[in-house]
Image (cartoon, rainbow, N blue to C red; front, side, top):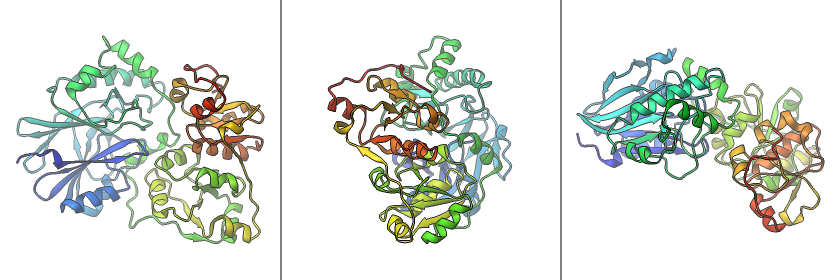
Length: 459
């Protein structure tokens, strides 16, 4: 068969920074690669083409989302393809290095490329002897390679060296071979910033700094040096994906709750997550609730900051899509959804509930306060306000006592800073304010210039 460029359909999850792929096999069937449990985009893409998903492959045991392969096997009868070295505990076709699967005119060849995980496979898509492209998952990615510390600090160097050998193997493919990674910009599995999500072997050989490393030792040092922090839930999902996520019998829901029902749930240990915009949260929220505005990154921060075994009650804006909230939670294994407060804060107050407010200040209105930057370390190093203190949002709960008195909390726009304020509030710190803006806005308002480097960090 001929393979046209439009036979490959990337499905980008902007929040997790990942790309899944649907491949039109040309005979009414499709291959789904590295798809998450939230299969809505896959279903839409397949329906537009009139395709049935016949194969579902995973490049590795994902740490950042629950795989949708098991669900596709159950719902569509798809053949699940995965590494034999992963010892998955559900029906699948285990593949070893250089084994091939016929896809009805096309061939998928497994290439062992350990590094990101022990059992990582890349998949070379072939039309006869012609290389159509390679799905590289968390091995070779645009401008880098995925992190090697997910199996613990004692394995990081070993896996970095395995990643070196895997990338060298991939670069033996022809320069024109398209590279289709899973991890990209925005992924905590590690990727540099940039708009490109696909590349070619030749482009990476020419421009990827890791591939310019003269030897294995230098490669390992460079890769490990660029590793930042990652969400806490990453430590759980690999094993769940090995066992196989629970098959869903229907779409997850967010049931309606009255204010009285929310109050009872709070008394039994439920956690309120407020998904409204930062300004709405600042104007009034249920005491001890956590602000995580509903946006692309919602799942990452939910999984980073809250335990998965706590019932969740959501306070949502009227325009919010409750199905989106539910799927973002479910794709990272957060299934204990108690429901949402019907009528929002108006209903809460009408039922006698108390609310808390948070100062939300424009840059020009901030005077005499220490500046606490809660962005990621790489963002801070790229440019920050002079004299600012740095504690990443993910580490803030453990460092609440180090927050300067009366500090103004800041991130890039205000969303993460409002989350930070809500965490500090739960720790008894109600003296802080949140910056409505970012470091550039603050510096411009106060006649300052941003500085680069990592000084000022308290974490």
